[in-house]
Length: 124
Image (spheres, rainbow, N blue to C red):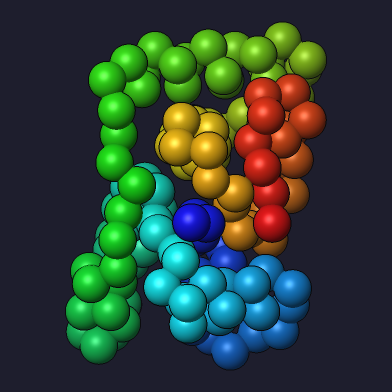
């Protein structure tokens, strides 16, 4: 199982190129992809999201939040911030979902590298 970030999903649906888009395409084809719930909220909150894309997104599996998630996310964010690095809250929540379920994240957002280096997030 792999997770996908909003940045890569948008690139995928816009037909852009990149290693992340190729990984996403392969994961979709194999049925091996899920959305962290924060990513689902980000995608579905786009006012101009076409109805057909909305339907596709709603059919894909999500990564469930488990007990203690918010406390672990706070600790993860604090760990990154301790190094004087940027740790946006949505990115923290996405990273924590992946860390909790030991799944790698497909992303083109370089901000996740801090979670990889300091918190054990696996990146594709």
